[in-house]
Image: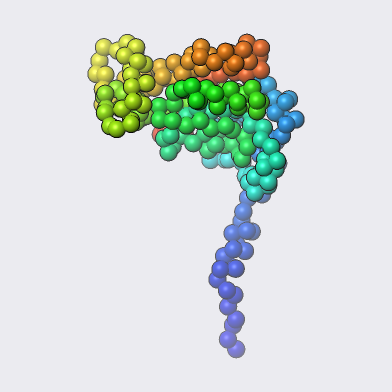
Length: 233
């Protein structure tokens, strides 16, 4: 008697479903709500991101019910933090901090600096939508920083890099100041993060007042793209 074979696709699907990791019960895996946001202090939001980065680096990221998070957050968003990061493909905040749908406002631009429109976006995120933390996330081996070091000129990129060049000029360094010198590039990247943190507090009275009253914290951080580890300042 010929043995009847199961259809391949349903069989594979069943095996995958059987091996899938269970949804995490960790509170950090749950959708942010108005209540959890209201109860969260800036220091707690910062710790959530630090914990998330440790999970990311170790490969033990939380398993979230993303379809449910989409459904839940569709009724309203209550993110815990805003992250200003570079457009670099290795620097996605939701991944490197192991966050879910509705957890993070993400502002991304090559060189992770701020302009008036970004400041307005951050004011909305913090004052209106209740975000407790702003992280300026730079990263190692940054192409925008390298371009600014080398005075690269290319279409609209020229104007963008011009905004980074004051930081390049302000970094005191006696050696090779080109993109070929990784030490100098990382010094500029770190200086750019600190400069952006200062710009936020200097150029936005709205955000500065929130920091002064203790409802918001603004911090800098650097992502090592070779390891995935984030170091906070």
